[in-house]
Amino acid sequence: MRDSIQKQKVKKQRKKTNNVLLIVAVALFVVGIGFLLVDPIRNAMRKKAVNEGITALESQMSQMTAETSEGETSVPSEMTFVVDPNANAVDGEGYDYFGDGEMSVEDELATYEGSVTLTGIGILEIDSIDLSIPVWEGATVVALRYGAGHYESSVLPGQTGNCSILGHHMRDYGSMFNRLGEVQSGDIVRILSTDGNTYEYCIDSIVVVAPEDLEPRIAGEYFDTPRITLVTCTYSGEATMRLVVSGYLIEE
Image (cartoon, rainbow, N blue to C red; front, side, top):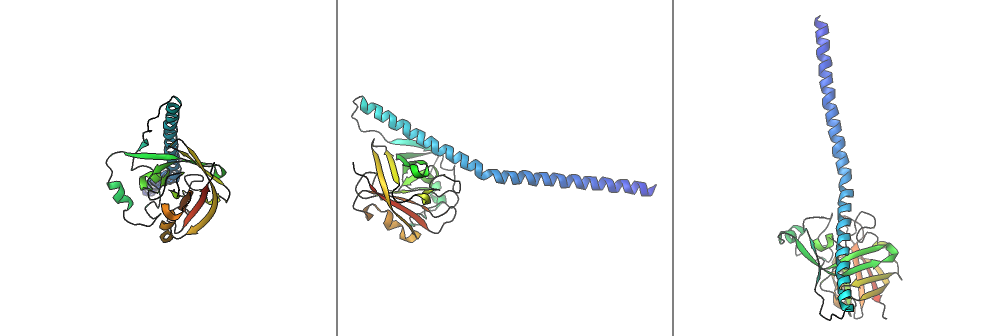
């Protein structure tokens, strides 16, 4: 009788233990699935935000074109896109692109209150790598979360000098400047500028440099002819080198 009671107690204890183990296993499985889905979800949200930026610029550029065709001669207003500065964080982001080290990601984000208004200078297209991405004024942490950023110490598209545009090398294939390393000499880079013009550049220089050697290369005065310079990390995450792709303006 006692043995029977003892066996029942043991069975109940084992059943309870098994139930606990099952719950733990299910919980770990759910957590694991959650971790696996984090990057795909973040990538999808980032692509959506980038596409919304392109759509916003295209809409405003189309409106400007329509007004011009109707005889409007007023100077076009800035083309903008309102974003959440705390969204779309990028692994390894920071000011390491041009190595000034003056402000951390946290310091920059702390300067914002509420939403941030990005000013667009155009849409960058590279057909050879199927890239279309908005270009915002200023290579800030927030700007680079929503597209590429125009280095403010460089010239604007079409102007004489060096027009430098920076972007992240994302892990997600085709995202941001992920495929910039596939660009070859002779490829065409196109800027659909918010000034109403389209500028095309032919790539003729592709180099990899250390971060500390980058800043002079992206300054506006680095070239005395109209050129474009595109910059990204050599790979995603905490990259140690910078890929610099440059080309000359194709004159009409």
